[in-house]
Length: 178
Image (cartoon, rainbow, N blue to C red; front, side, top):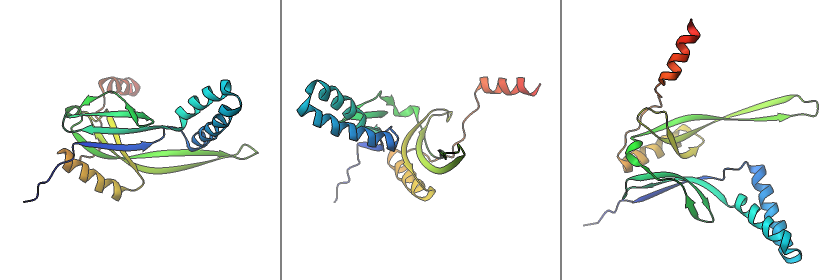
């Protein structure tokens, strides 16, 4: 009889919080800082520490099934920092569509906006107003498959994203209609 062990911890890496250009700049500064350590340690040490912090910083989400808790974390050199929240605060799994827009300018200051859609698997609160991103993927099929896996392992239903309108927003809408 095979003994099936359930996974106790899930870690979802989201990548660096910096844009790609800033990340490349941070890696260049790390290299310059290491070179400066040999020549001028007074300049090299702070430059290496600061740029190393930027270059090796990553974000993600972690779920601990044994303790029934989760957190959004920032990791620096493998050490994760973040506030733990009870898992019962997030009873739903959902797939949401998100957009990123990049604006490019020419020399004549004409701009071109490039908008890309991508999908994320998130855990939602009861009111759907608070969400914790688990995965950022490009297409709906991949997200749907991963959402089904996560839903099955956590025992949470996959629901469509439908946030409740807060009372303050409802009041603003009523005032605007008058």
